[in-house]
Amino acid sequence: MSFTGDTHMERNSGRRKRVMIACVTFETTKVTDPIMFYEANEVHIIHYVKDPVSESGRIYNSFFERVREIVGSSPREIEFVEHNGCSVSDFSAMLRTVLGIIQSLDGECDVYVNISSGTSEYAAAAAIASMMVPGTIPFTVGSRRYTVETAEDVRRTYFVDGKPVGLTRETYDPRAMQTYSIPVPDERLVRALRILDDRNSRGLPVTSGKMVAELQRDGVGLWYRRTENSPNRRQAEAVYYQRDFVDKWKEAGWVEKGEFGNYVLTDEGRNVVETFYVE
Image (cartoon, helix red, strand yellow):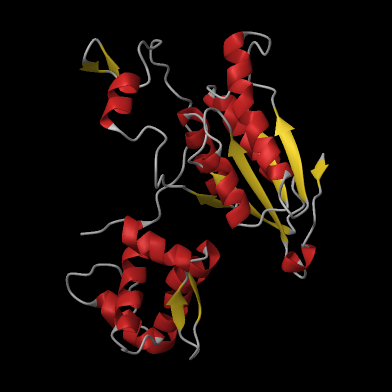
């Protein structure tokens, strides 16, 4: 269904369509504020009510209805798509659902996935699904203020018999999640990329000759080609550097050509060097 108010579609004229995926349990603001912030044109809301006619089911569903109401009151035209087919506490079902939504899109859009809303199973599945489809943008939403603010409200909500408990009074037995293999980036490529970034940051040349010399330096141990006896050593090393490092960086989306023709790190490349094999 589409919600149309006093539309101001000219704000998005010339822009790619923006799609957002989120899960609704007991939050509304964490879902609706990002929709407005990113000016989403299409929202996919995942939720689940086991017994909609029960009192608890009606309360649970009221959060979803409130999200729909807020989205519907937007001055922009927003397509609202509901997903209510499986439990939001089932990790595999959530991974299948989120991945299915992303893969169903035509590719001519920006896809934002809210991993701060909904259940922990949804959040984990949504984060993994986002990483499986290049270009997908997962994001988090921090809470600036809470509905439970005073010490009295905290004690009344989170304490039982004068002792801190939290929202959960009793749990089910733990269930192991299904695992999926996500390869860790190759150590040689990451460490060499960090050398490239360091040289760029210090204004040092990053030509193939300079980079090969750095990779061959004692203690670095990142160059494994034997080129000492090659009649065209410099040319051979330049070819190997391109093949063994630059081409693989480019394929992974870690580097791009900079303003002066040298290779510089992309945002993804920056995330890689700041996350993996950090001394």
